[in-house]
Length: 555
Image 1 (cartoon, rainbow, N blue to C red):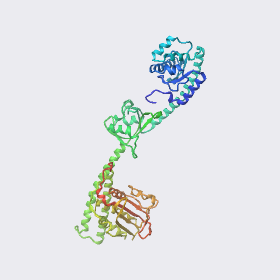
Image 2 (cartoon, helix red, strand yellow):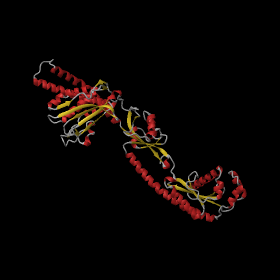
Image 3 (cartoon, rainbow, N blue to C red):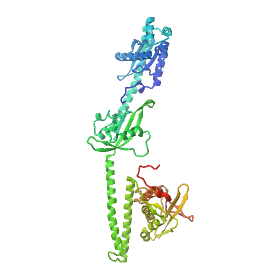
Image 4 (spheres, one colour):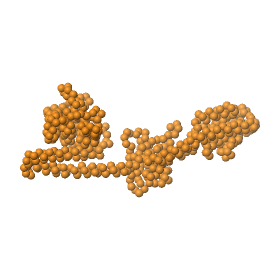
């Protein structure tokens, strides 16, 4: 136990102590009580005389003298190591105090007495009553005559029994103490074997206990950590203080917060922190426990990854655009005429560069969305034109598999503000996905309809239907995750390799819409098709919305 004196109630339950003192009083008919080191009662005051209960302890001065007398008796008993018989410091009655000792610790005192071995003089009684401020002096004297009188030999025999009782209490406490000590040792070993830093603080945030991992993490001597405010070891003390005192009461879901902490050499490291308030009996706050996990290396790897992704996505863009420009010049005849076979090959290469360019753009947009939030560039446009251009963009891939794409413009022509460049890339991703998994000479149906309902208001609903293998129900939400891959056991299964569907979901949701897949789906004629129907809905009013950086909250 850190920072406080060992207490009897830490070792024996109060109900047990109460029962022992009560039974002792019944057997001896002598007043008794168990008190702490300051003379304050721990148990109830059993069989107290009317003199002590109604008069001696009825005034502040009288009560203070009684507590001081019990404290004095316990201190003297500890000195001699056995029961101490003495005149109480208040009324002059005979008392006896036996200390409860647990491995050298004085944890409580068993006090009994309130008897006389010989009568007190009236003068002495009057002086005591006057000294403690008793107004009913006559009542005090009458109560004095009611005090039990016993021989000194009888008193000694009762004290001997009390000594046996006290040793029994000490033995019970000792067993519990040794058990707790063994538990504390095991707990100490366990805590020191943990790789995370564990820091215990008092209610004010002063460090009281640390484990070996804390010493290693902070690269400081234990003496320079224990006794110091825990906040001072962090770059932003106020933020750490707020989380320590409040964060454990209102913990939000997700990863724990990360804090910068300062090393002795001036370098900055990072720790992920979890907080918990700890309590004693009766919900009395004892302090806080903080668990720190060093994530410095993870931060470095994350930074390297961000730098690498940023470099790749930016640096890959220019070469791809250069290749596209050269291939376009070749197809346009600016670099000389091509035969039919050459034209087909250049068209195929150009189509591949468009796909590669889209992949790079998808990668960059997802990276930006995760780092700072996706910023939409909204301009006037309509879904019909966007879908028509998307279908033209994938025409070469569709022709290569002799796939027919059916689309009738006219239902999604409402003009609205949106980031049409990114929406077109999302539509191209969905169309390429449908082409990839459609059988040879298959059909793909594309539609855009203007709809309205109470929940979403006015929206544009886009559907892209294919006749491919379809997607199992339990995997239909997973395909929108980054780099999702189904089991390789079935090579015919759809695979979410790449970021096309992830990008499409991100863009649609950035416009305030939603995207989903139905597999199998029901055709308008009522027939069931085993392929996939990808659908997304975008509010017509999406132009009034804008994407904000991650962490901001819409009210």
